[in-house]
Amino acid sequence: MSEQGYTIADYLFDRVAEAGATEIFGVPGDFNLSFLDNVIASDKLRWVGNANELNAGYAADGYARERGFAAMVTTFGVGELSAINATAGSYAEYAPVLHIVGAPSTKLQDAKRRIHHTLGDGEFNHFMKMVEPVTVARARITPENAASEIDRVIRMILSKHRPGYLVLSPDIAKLPIYPPTTKLIDSEEDITSQAALADFKKALSEFIPSKSATLMADLMVHRMGLQSELKALVADTQIPYATLSWGKTLLDEHSERWAGIYAGVASRPVVKDAVENCECLIKIGVNYTDTTTAGFSQNIDQDRVIDIHYERATVSGKSFAPLAIKDALQALHEVLTSGIEVIPKSFTGLVDNYTQHGAEDGPIEQVDLWHIIADNMDERNLVFADQGTSYFGISDVRLPAGVTFYGQPLWGSIGYTLPACLGAGIASPEKRSVLLIGDGSALLTIQELAVMLREKLNPAIILINNDGYTVERAIHGENQPYNDIPLCNWQLMPQAFGANDDNCLILKASTPAELKDAFKKIHATRDKMVFLEVITDKHDIPPLLKDITEALKPNKKQA
Image 1 (cartoon, rainbow, N blue to C red):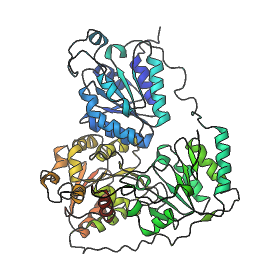
Image 2: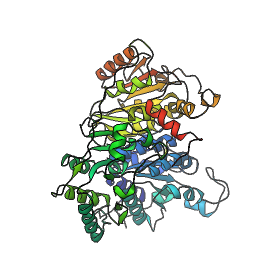
Image 3: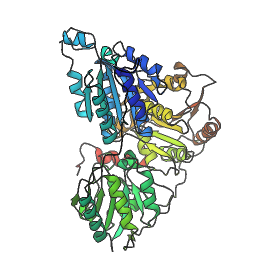
């Protein structure tokens, strides 16, 4: 009935490869072992085993941000629930990841037996219910629905840019099936109403003239793969622009038109003026969060906003939908270059008058640290900043054009960036990942150093040793023991996971002079991992973080 030896597992993994993955992350378990053999036998996919399922989910998330799709495999119950935190983060932050779960055989499930990795009640649908809020599509694969459900779930993941979930029993996985004869994605789904698009263009043409304009971009531009379209629009106009920290590096931060990172009341005066005092604020793919807006402290009158979002757009509060973000962005470009009067918001420009505060041989201060790090980036870097001093420190300084910046300010799961850096490094081997992570965050996922070393990756890992949870100290409990972490010898940590002189360079810096010298060694070491421990004071925080933590303290009123 099918081509010789072609199985449901083969069909699934062929579709995974067609969606854009060349690697699959995960952890083996007895319920998935037999169909992991199909991955090993595949000439399109490679297995990347992780230290645990949570790390596998984080790695898949980082991979998906670079590739546009990723897949991971775990076992039933214990494995999938370990990964659900990562899946929730992928859902919140629009990372398209397929989670494949190996389940007990259909014979055991039908008999309602008390099976390991279950709750022992004979029920096998508990965990599928648990992932429902954090996935856009789910299916339990059967012989009858295998082709249609595999295709449906992957198509939904690609369409909605969010995770999906498949349950596959090993006895089902080995059953025969016909290979696919149609493409997984024949054409992009067109959701746009032509009437809505026409009315949107008309509204733009009537609203924009005679108003001073500023553009603000954010996360969804990246997730929808519209960076080139955004840059083309900016290049063809003279409008000043900003981003939120979530959208950092979408646009050239060294341009004279760069106003800066907008963060509500925590914004620098120049970007606050450009965003809040223009007469026409053009928002593209903007999502506000408490951490990116200093507790929703943005002061923006919606009557003067053009807001282009995922599947809708508004002009001065009037909504146009359904309207895909790509079509709305193209319409905006056409209107802005149609000859109508476009008035750029006047502003003085973001002047970088930074001078180093601390002495070369003194302690490293946060106010200096991130400038020194930024000065040593180049256009080939993927920068991952964990949610803490790293994220807020690097958000507030300019990065070179071409750098791609990743954080997780909405889900905010500390430790996420280390495995995500691994996944992105595998997805884009031509780029060099730079990981910025605190000691508290690193303790959660440090095991994945072993996989980085096994995969022969060359990230620059910059671990900020500030003796505990510094962000939490700034919010509450400055000297409370719950903000302390166990004392670790970070210089020995890489060796515990397989580092040696051939695959890793281990460095330490406690002064600006030592930090600058360490970066010279990082630049000279391109063929292996570099692990740099940077010592800072546990009470020292970046200026932006100081303003934001003040706004986020429990006793502060939030808008």
